[in-house]
Image (tube, rainbow, N blue to C red; front, side, top):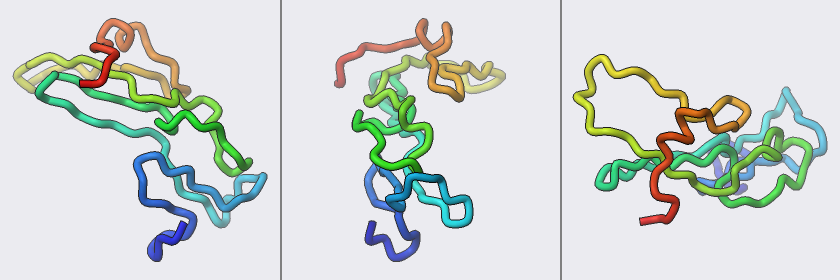
Length: 112
């Protein structure tokens, strides 16, 4: 919370961003983690966390949508395509639901 550039913004990958208010102040927004990604090319994995990856529940009303957080990184496998004319695969919805394509492409659930 001591960031001199953005008030109410921490420094970690799981930033709970809050101004300690019960309502979401549109005029003075808190900043926080929406999702987090880690690429692991050596294992052809894309680790994705919808919401906060730490699994903690929100404490204040200005931490909106965090009740939907997965609370962990989920691995998704990706191929070794050429990079040309590849389709975009939607792995999760905006609401945090893993799509059928996402379920099909899930990688090894154990961290490497």
